Length: 313
Ligand SMILES: NC(=O)c1ccc[n+]([C@@H]2O[C@H](COP(=O)([O-])OP(=O)(O)OC[C@H]3O[C@@H](n4cnc5c(N)ncnc54)[C@H](OP(=O)(O)O)[C@@H]3O)[C@@H](O)[C@H]2O)c1
Image (cartoon, rainbow, N blue to C red; front, side, top):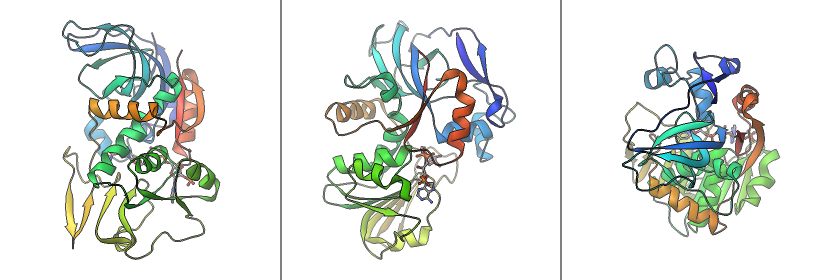
């Protein structure tokens, strides 16, 4: 099968298209033919081993898995003998491993679900990373209807999903982005948009929940903008490899960070949200598998809108 192999950390050209053996599913695994994946900011961090912590997780000297990629949409082509949730022919989407390849083997119990019926494979691949992670963080922050929610970094993968998710929970949403993305963020349902190049988001004691997706906000100013019992949630507060999210209370304000944990039922929740018309895919660019290095270069620039999709079919 064709796969993009990454045998060392480095610039985009470390990603090489190769013929590799097709994997065989274990008893508790499904074999998925991947029709679409994405290049996420996380894939770029992994490829560059930036920050150094990446090496402790993914391999000290080289990426242990050899094939990167986490988002996927595709079709189950074989299942191990213990698998009950899926059968060959099922169209699925979710988070996985080694998705920069025509086929990948995934545990049945991981964060996958049937693909939303009203989406193409490309659209479905653009949902898991941004929406599943943002769903986790918004829930950590205790999102509720009627709350004032600020999404800082509203135009990236996590941000575009967060705006839509927060609206679906019934929150009043303010999105912070640059001038070029104001219309996009409004079109996703934001009640208010703030252009970070012209206006300061920080207004004392305004928000019930601040969700921070890009590392450009001062923590203390963020805290000041929270109401007295508000929650500050950051996708960037990664203090250690601890899988458990950490939290502390600053006065009555709560702060959460950590690594998003995504369960199969979260993917089912997102599928239903998509089918109800409350969550749509935001796709900036599409590239074929063989141009993945170019896609990495673009994502590394840090200004993509939503998601960058890779097509394999
Ligand atoms: N903890 C976890 O479990 C977890 C999970 C997933 C992701 N993450 C992290 O979350 C971060 C965001 O991920 P992502 O995939 O959403 O990133 P992304 O899609 O690459 O984010 C790009 C977006 O960030 C915006 N941006 C850049 N500078 C900005 C600024 N100063 N103010 C507001 N927006 C700005 C850009 O808009 P402009 O072009 O307008 O600047 C662009 O639209 C990454 O660092 C990732 O590693 C953490």
